[in-house]
Picture 1 (cartoon, rainbow, N blue to C red):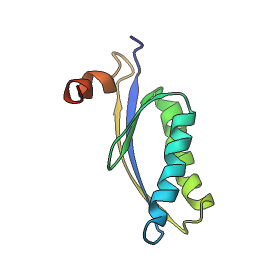
Picture 2: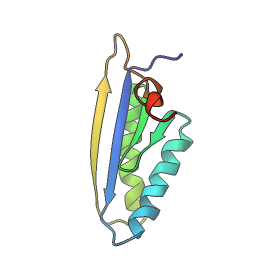
Picture 3: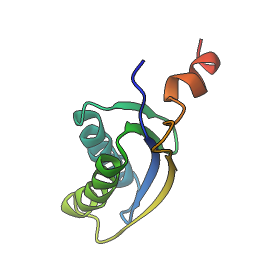
Picture 4: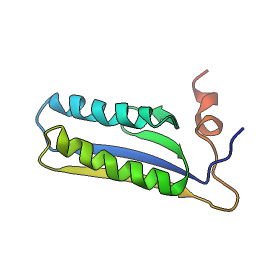
Length: 100
């Protein structure tokens, strides 16, 4: 099992009306999935695991995607676990037992 030094949980809240939120958020999720990193999409946030610097670049791009998709502004809530020495617990270790 590959060990990662960071995980990021991100929720983007583009300032758009109604179900337009879903369209914009779906664009962000598609981008995150396109990175090839292990991800877990939940009802409120998406979790990604990988290298800390790469995850910070992804978080930055998520904001820009919302703006390019038509949102005049975006707020995001992020949680970051970072352990450069020992790595962080994987998504699978944390949630697989709850989804069997």
